[in-house]
Length: 195
Image (tube, rainbow, N blue to C red):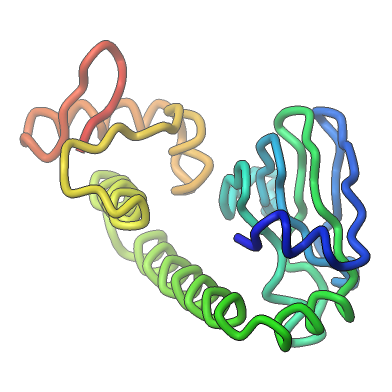
């Protein structure tokens, strides 16, 4: 998101996290901007029944957890390292200074936050009224749009990750994907899903 040369010109810490480490927990005060140099992070909530609901997966060069910095609120979800990670950690004050001094980066963040809000609105609608096939197709189409792919798009999510992102059981995801393949809405080649 922020070029390394720019973020490294501010008082940033490049912190190493081991796989399985919680970076921050839901409800904690948001005090830092986080950007992944290497690794994979998931953001998630737990439902009252203890089921995990994944808000998103974040990889190299992606930021996560920044919206609460803009509205002085707590983190709405927890962040967890799925792999060993190297993550830039920049204080809120320095992050805002960076945005003031780099208006093009600030505009990129505005667009990013808007895209995430649109995605959340789509998912909320899907979870409340649509059948599993529709939920999955909406998620996959969103990923394809985000990747700006006009060709055959390979979905780089496991069935478990699709389950986590849609609130469906893995078995339901497997059946729904097979049904969508039968309807020619997607294709499966060597266990990979393509759209």
